[in-house]
Length: 172
Image (spheres, rainbow, N blue to C red):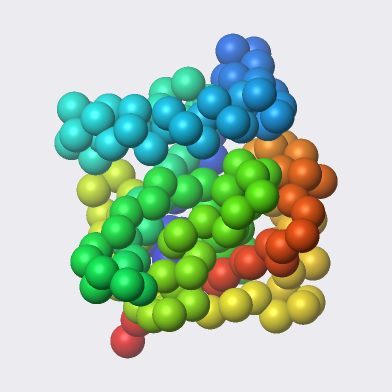
């Protein structure tokens, strides 16, 4: 049994409303709006729903993984709500940052310390994050669009920085 199965991390088929929300979120304006508001809104909704509700899960029918890293400067736990891509028997995460020009902080934290915790629907697992190999990157990027079309749009807008992709493996 892999990490995706252990966490019950699955995609549900979106309806017309969910597809419209996903399309809006992948636009430049939608990505900017969500990059500014989603962390705050997601944190509140997650607390109200005991960790089982997130804005993307409700509005766009996208499963959200909470990644807890150790802050590279502070040493404190840092939480990021991410949409993961099922890959083989595990999950992959992409540092798209909504297609914004800067690398997300969670990427820099993982590069400093690859130990992390992932939580989905109240189930938590300790993981090690490793950079995807060149072959894995190709496979993950090709799969990502079938789970969330925004990934393709975000990749097109990322310029001047490398898109980092991590494969999550169970910590032993």
